[in-house]
Length: 105
Image 1 (cartoon, rainbow, N blue to C red):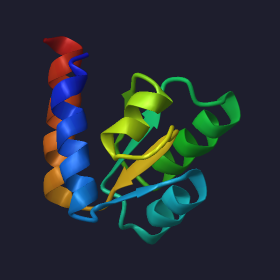
Image 2: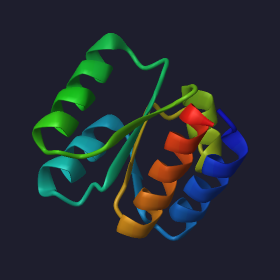
Image 3: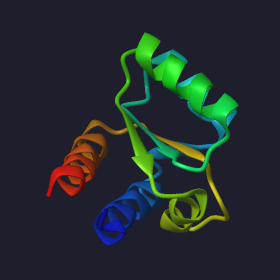
């Protein structure tokens, strides 16, 4: 996966204050219906993966996977982050396109 493109866009979304990071805050956004996309790091614990995947499935929120927690954290200018929710439709749609193209392209 080409990290450069999606990390830049995620950083831009962060500067626009359109993302939330941290497990509990992300779950809160999923429950409230504000989360448009959730990005989960591949190296998250099994418990966290299951909890986030189950919430995304039951609330019908798209879920994509980042390479690791350090890449995800660096994208938003923070230390390691395991999970991030995008709360803006435009950023979410573009990020999903980037993740999907990198999987198949």
